[in-house]
Length: 505
Image (tube, rainbow, N blue to C red):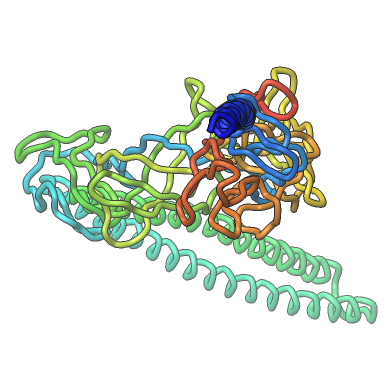
């Protein structure tokens, strides 16, 4: 019994020692496991990545590690692009314009007189030659009658003298013809007397008498010729003077008739009467302006700076807005010399619906700023020393220095870059010269924006081994690879603060 009791006590002690050993071993294993779990949980919670695992940017540690976020090495950055084009940069400018008649005339009186009738009213539309004012023309009518009588008298004098000259000419011509006949007879008689005298049948006295008759006939012929010539000269001179008198009388009659016609003051062209400056009974002088007439056509007069005037040419159609209505106008004048540092131009209003004279409005005209390569202003960058932009070449972003010639609206004209190139607009932060890029909308594996095939952002994997960024099918935030708001501020050639240089519109 004692032996069995000792054996039972010994077995109990061995069981106690074995239990203690098991507890010690269990405690050691448990502590090791706890330490292992604690050390392995730290990087996972921090969002760090291990080989073959891409952590989520913006969770845990704030530092970007290679392979994290949009700036990880070798990532393809999605960008927006536009195509550069060769052309002229045009800016739209505004100028104030005033509507005025194309023609405005202060109609002057051409004769003196007293107003007897006013035949039209202000605002009336009149035709060319339509009577507007009537002056008292009683004296002018008398002057016309006197001029008619003077002309009639001059014509009578001319007719009388013409008849007298013609009668005298006929008589003198008859006398000349008789003298010629007498001379012929005297010559025959003298020749016969000479032959008889030579035969001795005629005395010397008879021969001398025949010779005297011949001399007398010659003298009479010469006198007749002189008288005819004198009559012709006198008749021509007198008739010429009388013809001049007739012409003068005709001119005086025409002047009297013109004065009578001018007593009726007429519209010189079709238009509208804008003012009548006289009343019945008032005297009108030759230098007075009794009424004002404006043409129905309208034009816009506006002023532009001399630098803009060279861009406006005759025949160019512009838009003119009065606030209530918009009109099309056509420039009809070459730029004149500047006055007060502005150039005055006119443009004819097109169409039949015309604004009233005196209306004011705003017209828009284009101005050519510069010739060069046209790019979006949002593509221009500046690092403080130069202006540049990014172009896409073979899937890479390439920075090119440019000179800004001018800017207008959302475009700029530059030099230093060729046309027909893909220009990056609103370059995203972190874009470097030589970065791999793809246009927005392209299906490019490994891009730094967008979602993976399982609804995750590139650089994340599903499963419990790593923390997931966003639920499948939901958009990721900017810290998970989504592009942030574009900016033009860059501290180095991979970005800029703002483009510098070039003229503003």
